Image (cartoon, rainbow, N blue to C red; front, side, top):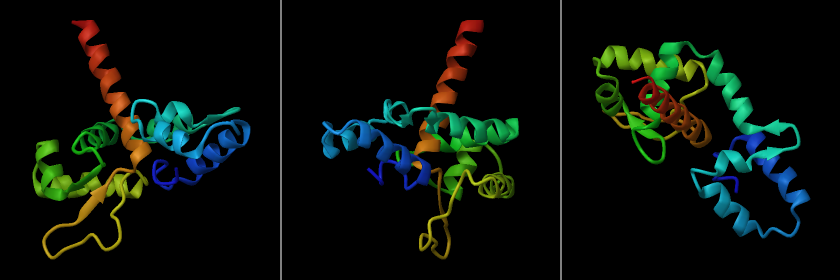
Length: 150
């Protein structure tokens, strides 16, 4: 459950709140629900506390360009991890521009660089799982909106 929550304290707390109410629900079944990318954010609601709404608030605080970059990076891999080389290709820019874009998202808390994942030539970056899922939802919604306008 903690892994599926990406270690996000609020998500872990909401999971605990849900499980306290849904006492009949086996932990393994709830963990399976959270592992489903299409349902994870829907599962993380307890009373008036919603992980999706909290992530959306942070998303709105990002500049439009940063949201676009985050959407592109979230779509790179299933697990949200990427290298600078992959970011450069996904963003269609040079290495320096990609570094600035990734560092802006690190400053905003939207991208991390897992400790110990640095080699001599490449660092591994990560969009946290739940933020990655949210960013992918936003990308899909934007594509549907664009298709509807055509």
